[in-house]
Length: 292
Image (cartoon, rainbow, N blue to C red; front, top):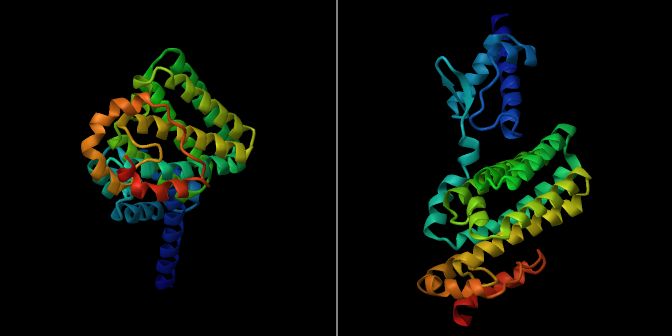
C-alpha cells in the first residue's frame, strides 16, 4: 500500500512538472515572471500542495526556476539564454556574423508571422493590437527608446502567437544576441536615419494587419520585407557589400571597412534578395574581397 502511494505521488509530481514545463516553453511564464502561489497551482492542477512543491523543487534543481525567500518562485532566463550565450562573444568579435543572424532571423520571423496568422488566439490578437497602438503612440510623441522597446515586445508576442515552442525559444535567443552586441539596434536605427521611424512604423502596420486578418502569406512577406529593411540599413552603416559579408570576409575586409564606410553610405543599395535569390548571393560572397 505504501509503495503504491509513493508511486502515485511520483506520477502526480511528474505530471504537474510536465504541465509547468509547458508553461515555460510556450511563453506563458516568461523569464523573470513570478509563478502563481502553491495554493493556486494546486487548485489549477487539482493536486495537493506538496505535489506542486516537489514539482517546483525539481524545476529549481534544473535551474529553470528560482525560489527567493520572502518573495516567491521566479522563472530564470536559462531557457532563453542557452542558445545565445556562446554566440554573444562570437558576434562581438566577428561583426560579420550579424548579417548571418539577420538572414536567419528573416527566415525564422517570417515563419513566426505565418503561423501567428494561422494560429493566434483572440487573446494573442488583442495583445498584438494593443502593442501596435502603443507603437503608434510612441512614434507620435517621438520617444525612440520606448518605441524600440515596444517594437521588441511586438515581435515577441508574434512569436508567442505562432504557438510553436521552438520558434519562441530561437526567436528570443537570436534577438538577445542582436540586442546585446549589434551597433544598430532598434533605437540606433531610428536615431541615425531620419526616415527610418516612419518606414518601420508602416512596416509594422502592414505586418499586424495581415496577422489580424489571418492572411499567413501576406504576414510572412511583410515580416521578411521588414527584416530586409533592417539588414540593408545595418549593412549601409558598417559598409557591407550588397550581398553581405561572410565571417571569413569580415576579417579580410575589416581594415578597409572604416575607410569604405562613408562611400558605402552614399551609394544607393538594393534590399536583400528573396529567399530564392539568397543562395546565389551567398555563393558569390567567397569572392567578395577580390571583387572589392
